[in-house]
Length: 50
Length: 243
Image 1 (cartoon, each protein chain N blue to C red):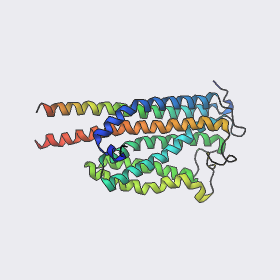
Image 2: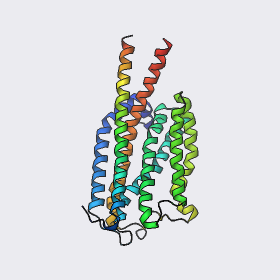
Image 3: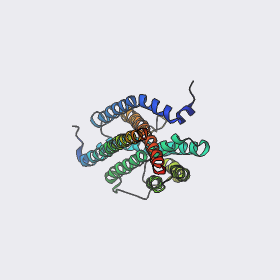
Image 4: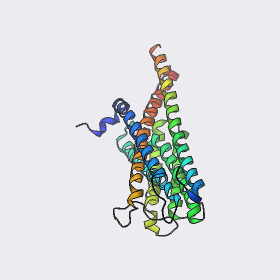
């Protein structure tokens, strides 16, 4: 860990907030992507089976 | 050589993006990991700003991409308005949550950086204010997509909103030149060697910028695929209701 001196709280909180937001964006995108893909597969199966 | 308009075909877009996505996510992850570790652990403190200079590796790329995401949405919206390609409208819709996240990161890291350097979290400075307005435009754009049930009408109206918001995207980028006042410093990157930041900060910053650009492209591809599927799901739902 580098010596961040008097600004350690600011630097670490900037990294924590940013990485948390990026992680949330990726996780939400993948979660919604999988949910929509599953729903479409179900709907297409219903369509095929009349 | 393949025409770019081939990607207006959803099947073609799905096939190409399916092949590209693993590479894009891998490259984005690698560039972000290398750039952020390099910047955080292996760069010195700035003689004036101390260790807060390390915030630059998040603040500058996120601010750049917040504006560039809106420019990409503008181009996609123009393609929708002129050529009525559904994939372009859905790509613009897919990019908005990514752009707003980058805007929030830029605003948050800017406030955290500004507090020790300027003595305040926030100032009604031209760049900060235009960025806040850009953030509100992002929220309005996403809300408009959600508020209108018919996808084509939603695409039309959000495209118009995107054109209007582009004024603020441009102002965000050039606010310092237009007004030449406020707390925010001038451009971090410059072709002029004298004005550009020192190489020791510049190279890890370039890697971080590449990481943010690649992550943006990867997420736009991924989320556009989701929107194409959601659109198909909507069409099947309409068909089922009519039977």
